[in-house]
Length: 91
Image 1 (cartoon, rainbow, N blue to C red):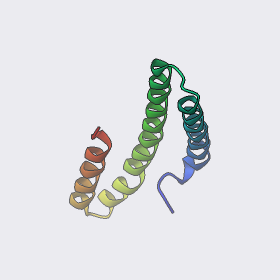
Image 2 (cartoon, rainbow, N blue to C red; image 1 turned 90 degrees about the vertical axis):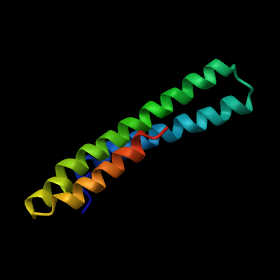
Image 3 (spheres, rainbow, N blue to C red; image 1 turned 135 degrees about the vertical axis):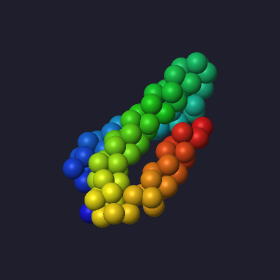
């Protein structure tokens, strides 16, 4: 079971909304909408995906990382968490 199982409905709902935003972006570009409007929508999609990532990251820390500490193997989990945060923060 994934550590984000309890938030699965919320995550799916958010991802469906993001999917709709991306389709809207495709339509805007196809229609030649104003550049600033397209950039504004792109910014909204980025923020929305970051929010989903934060939910998954929070659940990972509260689930998988906490569990590995209880099992006595914190080093591997810390390294994995740092790697995940590094990937998340790369722009």
